[in-house]
Image (cartoon, rainbow, N blue to C red; front, side):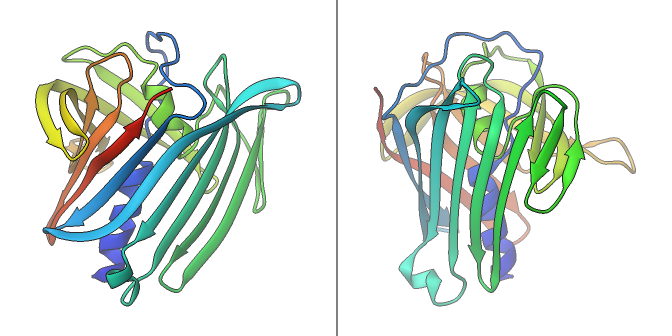
Length: 244
């Protein structure tokens, strides 16, 4: 039960937003931008998270954004199930596709370090566990969040998404269902309502339990994320933001 709750907590923070074949606008973020969140499970504060644009670096002479994210469970819940998740992504500045990804995960007794380099000369992903061929440009568990902010969004849109992590590639559809005013500790925002869904292989129907709210301004800030499950509701709220 506790492990399931925290696995969903972590998934909320890294849910795949790898959008392809969509109309792109200019990048809406700069070095120094930072978002901070609190997570609540059934009205109990369960943890904190932040994501930040650290710098513009280079990989093989290609300019890349260096993104960083850190997720921690609260002190109270550390006594039952400790969560620490550290993620870093190096994402191509011009194409907004991932060139390198690293994460360090500690969830209860489970610990894992994972790193993958994406080689676009031979189209192979080289991780510390395997070498896997791929086709096209890929995103990872962190760069996906920034990529979606470069997309022109409209109501009724269905966005095809894909994410590469843990040596696996997964596909989703993101449905833009409307707009809604959202109030969080960071303020009031007019937001796009996004519902990421995955098709069931058995009946080909959509399975949906997550709702994501992105601000309707040029920054497309991830303002609020809600996950509804049988055992309760997990909510991620924007506490503060610093735009550069």
